[in-house]
Amino acid sequence: MPYVQRDDAGKIVSISTQKTEPTPEWVAEGSLDLTDFILDMATSDDGSGIHAVRALGESDLALIRVVEDIVDLLIEKNLLLFTDLPVPAQEKLLARRSLRDSLNPLTLMKDDDGVI
Image (cartoon, rainbow, N blue to C red; front, side):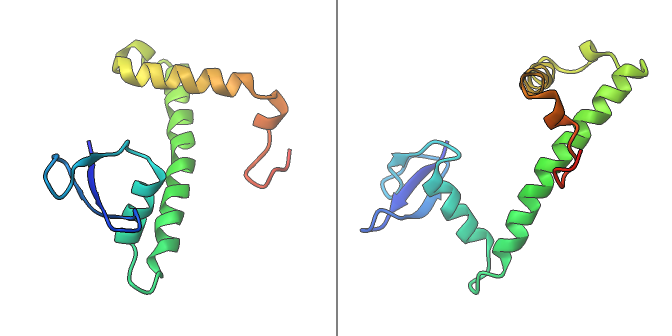
């Protein structure tokens, strides 16, 4: 989706949802250059916002696990049927469950500090 304009050094200086003369190059979402540009835009000139942006991202990752556990609990208590979830949500949950199952079971017993 994002089309970009780069400066002479190759750094992204502008993005657009459409291909235009100033933004002719398409880049993949999540590319390192695009992520750097968005982080630069999201932080203040003195860089103080970078910590908040990173903390929010880390919080999002932790919250994903909480939501996953809540969904599992609701299913376990028969308050929600797995098949009631949209197919893309089912696929994502199954993929995560498969990845978690492939990890060492002792790894899953550790808390956030790495203590069992």
